[in-house]
Image 1 (cartoon, one colour):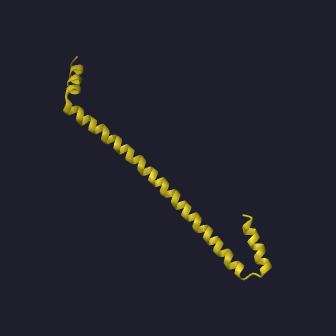
Image 2 (tube, rainbow, N blue to C red):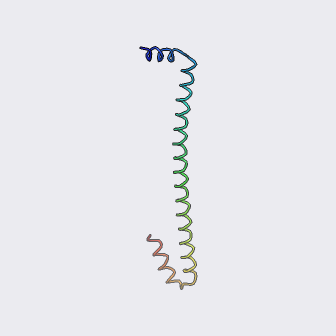
Image 3 (tube, rainbow, N blue to C red):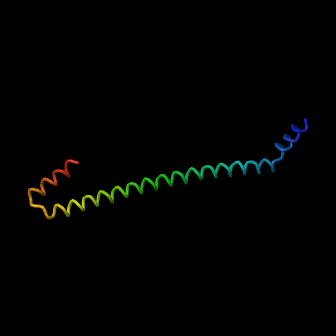
Length: 86
Protein backbone atom coordinates (compact mmCIF):
# COMPACT_ATOMS: atom_id res chain seq x y z
CA UNK A 1 0.00 0.00 0.00
CA UNK A 2 2.76 2.42 0.75
CA UNK A 3 4.22 2.11 -2.77
CA UNK A 4 0.87 3.03 -4.32
CA UNK A 5 0.46 5.98 -2.03
CA UNK A 6 3.98 7.22 -2.92
CA UNK A 7 3.25 6.88 -6.64
CA UNK A 8 -0.02 8.73 -6.14
CA UNK A 9 1.79 11.52 -4.34
CA UNK A 10 4.38 11.75 -7.13
CA UNK A 11 1.71 11.81 -9.82
CA UNK A 12 -0.15 14.53 -7.98
CA UNK A 13 2.93 16.73 -7.60
CA UNK A 14 3.08 19.06 -10.61
CA UNK A 15 6.74 19.95 -10.09
CA UNK A 16 7.87 16.32 -10.24
CA UNK A 17 5.63 15.66 -13.25
CA UNK A 18 7.09 18.68 -15.04
CA UNK A 19 10.63 17.44 -14.37
CA UNK A 20 9.74 13.96 -15.67
CA UNK A 21 8.12 15.47 -18.79
CA UNK A 22 11.25 17.55 -19.42
CA UNK A 23 13.45 14.46 -19.09
CA UNK A 24 11.29 12.46 -21.48
CA UNK A 25 11.26 15.36 -23.96
CA UNK A 26 15.04 15.75 -23.69
CA UNK A 27 15.56 12.06 -24.38
CA UNK A 28 13.22 12.32 -27.38
CA UNK A 29 15.17 15.27 -28.79
CA UNK A 30 18.45 13.44 -28.25
CA UNK A 31 17.19 10.40 -30.17
CA UNK A 32 15.79 12.58 -32.97
CA UNK A 33 19.09 14.46 -33.23
CA UNK A 34 20.98 11.20 -33.62
CA UNK A 35 18.73 10.21 -36.49
CA UNK A 36 19.23 13.59 -38.16
CA UNK A 37 23.01 13.19 -37.93
CA UNK A 38 22.80 9.75 -39.53
CA UNK A 39 20.69 11.14 -42.39
CA UNK A 40 23.11 14.02 -42.91
CA UNK A 41 26.07 11.62 -42.97
CA UNK A 42 24.28 9.37 -45.48
CA UNK A 43 23.50 12.33 -47.76
CA UNK A 44 27.11 13.54 -47.54
CA UNK A 45 28.38 10.08 -48.48
CA UNK A 46 26.02 9.98 -51.49
CA UNK A 47 27.21 13.42 -52.63
CA UNK A 48 30.83 12.36 -52.28
CA UNK A 49 30.22 9.22 -54.33
CA UNK A 50 28.51 11.27 -57.06
CA UNK A 51 31.38 13.79 -57.18
CA UNK A 52 33.97 11.01 -57.36
CA UNK A 53 32.05 9.34 -60.19
CA UNK A 54 31.81 12.62 -62.10
CA UNK A 55 35.53 13.20 -61.64
CA UNK A 56 36.36 9.71 -62.91
CA UNK A 57 34.12 10.22 -65.96
CA UNK A 58 35.85 13.52 -66.66
CA UNK A 59 39.26 11.86 -66.40
CA UNK A 60 38.21 9.09 -68.80
CA UNK A 61 36.86 11.63 -71.29
CA UNK A 62 40.02 13.73 -71.03
CA UNK A 63 42.22 10.68 -71.62
CA UNK A 64 40.13 9.71 -74.64
CA UNK A 65 40.33 13.26 -76.02
CA UNK A 66 44.11 13.27 -75.67
CA UNK A 67 44.36 9.92 -77.42
CA UNK A 68 41.96 10.98 -80.20
CA UNK A 69 43.84 14.22 -80.83
CA UNK A 70 46.77 12.34 -82.41
CA UNK A 71 44.62 9.91 -84.43
CA UNK A 72 43.88 10.21 -88.14
CA UNK A 73 40.31 11.22 -88.99
CA UNK A 74 39.01 7.70 -89.66
CA UNK A 75 40.50 6.29 -86.46
CA UNK A 76 39.10 9.22 -84.48
CA UNK A 77 35.63 8.53 -85.90
CA UNK A 78 35.88 4.87 -84.88
CA UNK A 79 36.95 5.88 -81.39
CA UNK A 80 34.10 8.39 -81.15
CA UNK A 81 31.59 5.74 -82.25
CA UNK A 82 32.91 3.37 -79.61
CA UNK A 83 32.30 6.02 -76.93
CA UNK A 84 28.90 6.95 -78.38
CA UNK A 85 27.67 3.36 -78.04
CA UNK A 86 28.37 3.29 -74.29
